[in-house]
Image (tube, rainbow over all chains, first blue to last red):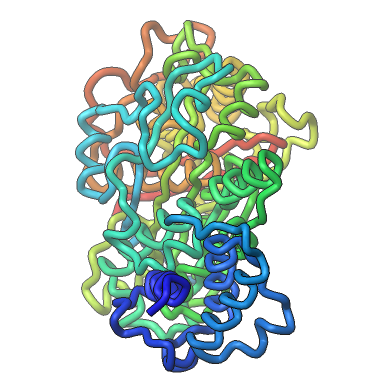
Length: 87
Length: 410
């Protein structure tokens, strides 16, 4: 698993008080009981970690952890000079 | 009209994070006022910055309170320190009284006072925003809204009845308990969680108070001739209230009876108190209790330790009680737990309930010599054994908003 996936999973797990092992790329936000407020909060933490900004329209399409990781990876790749912030 | 009694108590305070600990400190006269820093849970900036420019060195902070020991991490993330205090204090009171077991959730009210909202969350984000143009955390709005405590208590306790936050500066907690009392007395609801909570010990708020030059450089000394200001504090106190009839029917512990509530506005000056307004609120509370001034045997004073408050409050007591004023025992427990703004009336109501329950009136700490101009029976030294028929708990807020509870032992 790449660094982006690992960090996203850690952020989601911490936000929902879950063990990182219980969160996979295939996990849906519904399965993880992530409501709209959780989603905003998690997105903010992810944005802060990777120095990216998830567009509003993209946020609506994120249904799984994998969706989020994939989107963040694209945004991050578009900013080659951004470093991954350590927690 | 229903009789209204107190059947459950809860608190997170500078002198104890449970009612037994609060009680021990209250009657031992142990103060929670201490030099700062450190109070590790509270700062929004580092210790050096936090004291910069302040004329005072003391506060009354809650100690050894880790919200994660009590609350789910998701709740902790979504709420400010003041709401952490509120939820935990309400849990203590609700657990003791078993309120939600005995009443339908829509018949229970939650009325709490919080004047300042989530100041730590607000200042943390403001520092980020103005300091380094950082983005504002998306939970800032729900962390900072003053009603977050009321909402989160309702969510935590699954209570669906009338729920309100009251923001009337330093009278908020007393207004909240008074309104809950009226709602139960009238039959609008069967029971209530009522009290106050506040966590205002942030750098910006301390600096704001410092600028008003009303904070003691060291610690508050209410009614002392050499008093030189208030001491800021934080915390929460919650009471569960219900009708006497149902409390007795289920053999609940009854700590005290709330019998009257009076409130008024000075309509005079935004900071300079007027004795007429305080006197009016005390008279209303006594009349609301169908009592006579002669029955009052203890006054839990607002007693901030500022020149203006203590002089004016004493004058108001003399206006109401005439020649008997100097014979009524009076104390300000702010000398122990500091002034926690919207929570202070609730902490003092809790202290008054315990005083009536134990026939022991708490001391007024910090006095070197009673101001002779006050001419009141200020309780000094050890707590005083007494059996008052009626007690008053005064809150006299900035803006001239006065609130007074009248309580009887049970």
